[in-house]
Amino acid sequence: MSPTIATPHCSSCLRLMQNRTFQHCAWCGHAVPATLLFTAEEIAEVHERARVEKKKADALSANGKSSVASGGIDASDVVDIVDGIAQALDLSDLF
Ligand SMILES: [Zn+2]
Image (cartoon, rainbow, N blue to C red; front, top):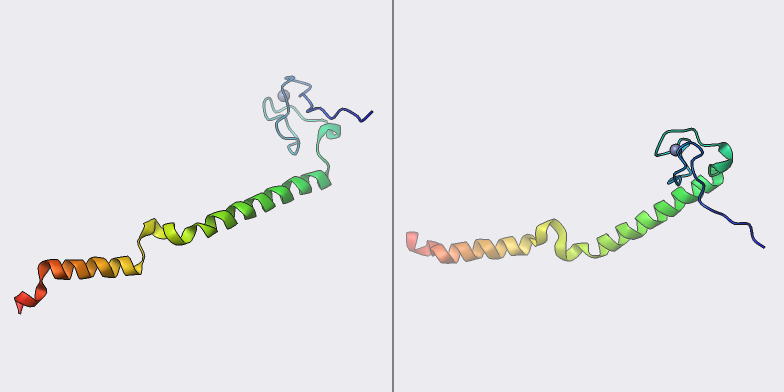
């Protein structure tokens, strides 16, 4: 039989502990017994996992950047707009 690993409850307010890396209950601020806290290794693992997940998310958004960067206007669009304005005004008539 494997031991049951249940999410512990705060001994003061009896609510579920949301984050076992904090030394105080997120609900009532009651000090959490060290036995219920993650160990330094477990906290490091949680942080490492978060770092990897963020890296993945950053890589995904970087991949999609080329078409949507800075509002979707790039230098060639600006040149097209300037050309369009020059043609619309037909600047050659001014001289
Ligand atoms: Zn509490």
